[in-house]
Image 1 (tube, one colour):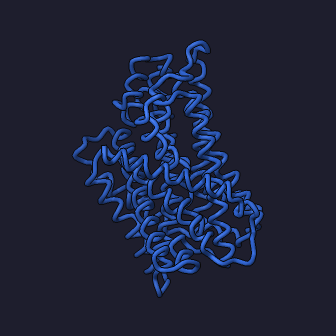
Image 2 (cartoon, rainbow, N blue to C red):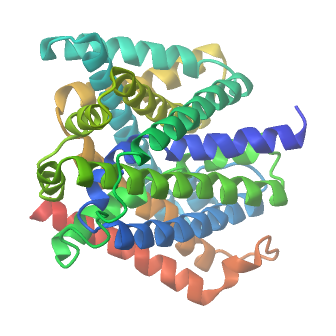
Image 3 (cartoon, rainbow, N blue to C red):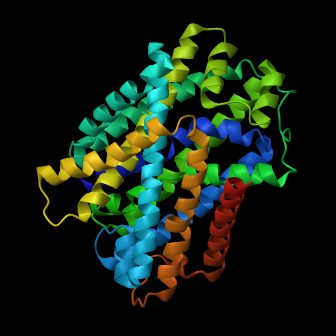
Length: 399
């Protein structure tokens, strides 16, 4: 496979990993701030996500091989950085996989119209299917992800065009919500940051792209920009359509009284067409599936990297661990979709922002691959944002 083809596939993997459960949760979150402030926040977090991606790739290029953040910490800093990196990465990945398995299971239940008592059975079936797909070589996973991702974009485009017709240009929730309350921002920020959670594929894609500096820069720029554009358009259209269709339901979203299933059901009702309801389910399924694929790849690769002997058995063992633990969490912890996403945002802040900046600061390096990683203003701004995300989620958990 030539490098340009790999670049395109890697871009889709990054974008597909980001566009998942967070996409379904975003309208519920952004409603609290209104479209204007919500869009500004998403753009700001995109800049932070892209810049910190470059920092992580800088460390991988200096290491000369695709290593996870924990391994980078051990190489350039020491045991403490390694333990923090490994711990936060594993917590993040297992949290995200739990969210995705829970989300896919819930969707399958709704589509098949099954009772809640069958949740565990459906979850095990979803887990088995995910495990079988992850056993494929990364080249095949690349193509599977391309198909799923392009399918999701096509259905998203059709749904957006359909919902636009129900929007009155004079009734747009620009500043509707509780944007003046700190509690709204503390809940929204971690979830929005998690929505750009493609960082779990750094080490996998760096090897896949042969650690090519220019290619990796393009991969993470476009791979992170595509979700940002999709998120902004998606949130705008969804919230405007709901605001025009049912103001009381919009108010319920702002008050935090609406879950994912209710949102999806209402979107299907807005147009009055049964085909739209099916389309919403398909979009939700494809969005979560692409994320599960990206995170699952990164988690399996990370677990397998710690095994001394690598063969088909080690691959199955890594998959069993990567899927088995999240499946148990998804079954035991019901209705925790947004709660787990918020917790994942806190873990993501540690491994994607704070720890890489720390390793970059304490490491003794001779070569610099990306000049922007030496910009003290950008490094300080990113670190502050990382601390803010952790403080927000800490407050959410405490109160």
